[in-house]
Length: 220
Image (cartoon, rainbow, N blue to C red; front, side, top):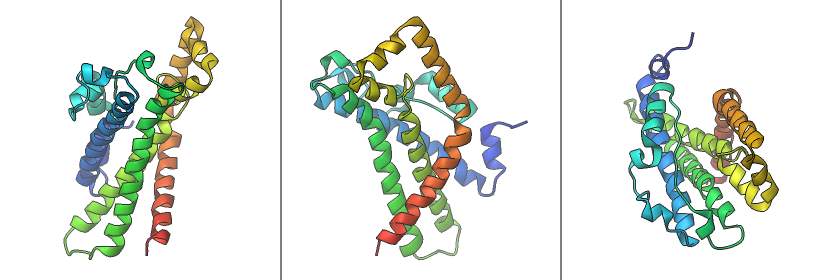
């Protein structure tokens, strides 16, 4: 039987580095993801993120108690940025606000990939473990943000992908507003949340390796 995720990580080589890296990148990336939603909403006329006190760096505010408990138990978490679509200007403003979170993860992914290449290829290797540990830390940043971007773009409520699609195709949103549609949405989300990791994690790892290789070719 699989054990507690913390124990599983600590049992791996350099487990402490993996654990610290995972905790940092999950919390940091989710907070920035939610702040990106808030910034986009504010720029489009919705001050709900400010009025509710969510324009902060506090993980407790963005993730909430339940998410942090789930993170401690399962190693996975989520965030929330309250917005009011009725206050957002522009016809497809809600899609822009929804896309801002995954776009932030893409930016973090690219930055971590560039730093990974610079660190590995241009920074002299030290005699201690710090150089290798930083390489792992940056790789996890690339992989996790690629994973968060892909996961949030799945068009199933309450993920960002459903809001993006629903903004362009209102019938899609109306479908999930019915009782049956709500059950379907809940079922899809549960399946993706519980079992999607079997496919998304390997894809994110392979994608991170491919992205780092691409930047290695591009950088002089």
